[in-house]
Image (cartoon, rainbow, N blue to C red; front, side, top):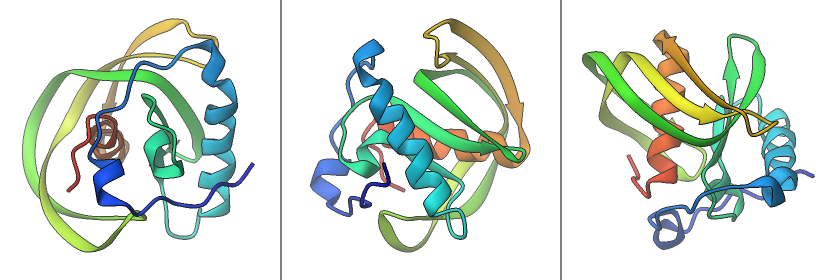
Length: 136
């Protein structure tokens, strides 16, 4: 189900809690909301649709991907960039890594570790920040 985007900075600043099997509907809602906002959005975190759980959905080179409980375990080749956000007005400066290694659970809640680079890595970092209550 497509959900409205949360813009409440106080809510978005709350660190999200661990997601589990009971959060599958939230993952589907994230995918539906991401698809509905595809013109101006490449990633969402669950708190952006009002659920304070560690779930993100994002465009992974043309295919949507969901991560439960993502954790960036390594980053390399930092750079400065500017990002926007559906939940916030304007564009802000931020620091990102060109390559990241992420530990996460897939939709079957199987633990995976994968390296992402480029724009996909940037998207994941932005959404993991949301999970950690960090607003750019």
